Amino acid sequence: MTDTPLWTSTEAAAATGGRTGAWDATGVSIDTRTLKPGDLFVALTDVRDGHDFVEAALARGAAAALVSRVPEGASEGSLLVVPDVLQALRDLGAAARARTKAKVIGITGSVGKTSTKEMLRAALSGQGRVHAAEASYNNHWGVPLTLARMPADADFAVIEIGMNHPGEIAPLARLADLDVAMITTVAPAHLAAFANVEEIAREKAAIFEGLRANGVAVLPADLEVTPVLLEGAQGHAVQTFGTTGNYRACDIQATEFATVVRVAHEGQERLFKVATPGRHFAINGLGVLAVADALGLDPALTAADLGRWSPPAGRGTRERIVLDPVDDLFFDLVDDAFNANPASVAASLDLVAVMRPQDGMGRVGKGRRIAVLGDMLELGNTEAALHAAIADHPAIAAYDCIHCVGPRMRALHEALPRRQRGEWVADAQDLAMQARTLVDAGDIVLVKGSKGIRVSLVVDALRKLGQGTHSLEQGAD
Image 1 (cartoon, rainbow, N blue to C red):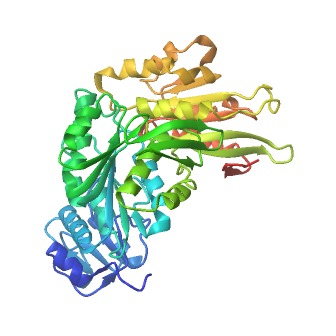
Image 2 (image 1 turned 135 degrees about the vertical axis):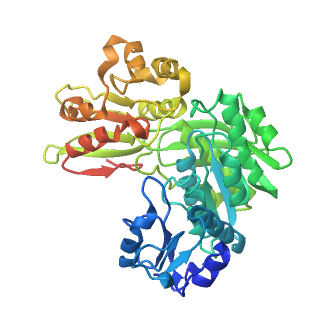
Image 3 (image 1 turned 120 degrees about the horizontal axis):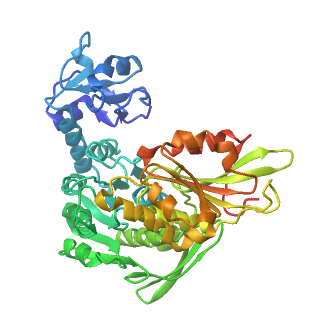
């Protein structure tokens, strides 16, 4: 526990209009499995009713529980009773935003929200105390939860804002009351809920409705829908980034373990790097520089701290799976199994295409690049064409074998040249059971797919082949 409570019962009751006893909370939790002693447990109703877990939360040491009804046997002194739990969580988030002097940055985009959030966490950390969610808490409960967890003395807060349907982003952005708002990119995603990419762009641009009057909009310069984003940012200062724009990448050099970027801005050039290959990471790094400059931070410190960032687990992290430590036999696994749409699949294919497999190590002799690609969900009536189009992506030529998972990925399987066509299975578990035959020592394996298609099962099966794993950083053996 910290010495200073995050919320006192008096503060929480004032924020929510609820009734309660006396307590101090050092955190806020919505899950008894990760709850820490001293947390305020929020009894949200989703798949399960959080009220069913109040007793367990209090037994685990929760300071109090935020509820809309008193569970049987519970003492009201340890409850904060409100009419609506989700609205009370929003009220806590709004109160946390109102009491802090932190500069608040909001991030949205079809691809790269979480990785860019983590880039900002790294880039800002040397110049103040940064608050950001530990996971992709970017929806109607995730944003208020992130705000409610924000310490009053934070210097910066980075808030990820996502959407699945029209009208979701603006209220979350207004709740966060943003000093800077950044859009990473706009791409075909959630087309089941939107008629076209331009509609997606308008929804993404709604983040600027949450900007303060003196706030700064940071957005990509190179998109066909950039004019739509600029229209949404009218009335605010705007910075653009990309291969054109205010922050322009003059040169991007991707090596196996890092990407180095030369940036032109206001007639001057500077360098930065990220400790991973990937053009998409480099481009989003430009946006991070723009955000830091908008906050008035030291550009040299920003670039130095950004250089220590590498992708979080499940977001393109490269790890070595050791098959035989005595003979030094291994393969490399790139786990990018958290989410997928056409733009993020293309970025992942590009990422692994610059990585070098190890020849002369395995049964095959030649180290291979192998991709396991799962369905991209929520693409509407264009899904078959968008899956098949992956076969035309230039980086596909670098892969020796591509396995496809899910009914939608059959379109890609049929579009691939026969020499690259691996297995097609309807269910990820069927491919996971073949893990031992999918890979050989010296290979690099990319696993990518929407979370709902569960290609993470293939990741788990591949990891279990090993006798040890470790992440690969720049300069690793």
